[in-house]
Image (cartoon, rainbow, N blue to C red):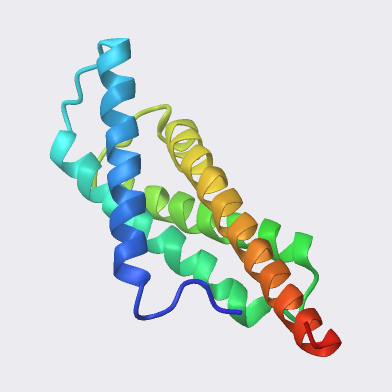
Length: 140
């Protein structure tokens, strides 16, 4: 069962991006943090939203593999891409000393929340489909 497809990919990215940016802004307002790199960080949030949504959408193609390794593999793939991007960017500009830790936290928290929402929705749709098939089978 495919939850994220080409018809709803952009809307899912937009919703997740909006929620992440609103969460970022609320957190910064509550802590009194002023972001010197506001524009760059907003575009980084958009890029990570697209990347994370694309990685979650790969679940459809990975259903033949065990669930837990797929979920862990998807997360490790995302973090690997993020850390690789930080490493590459470090060759062109100076990274903050806590860049890896900051991105680990900034990516992990929204991704875990998004993955939970995705997989709960997935299993609820599977359960609903099974109930429909069971009702057809029993003639109800």
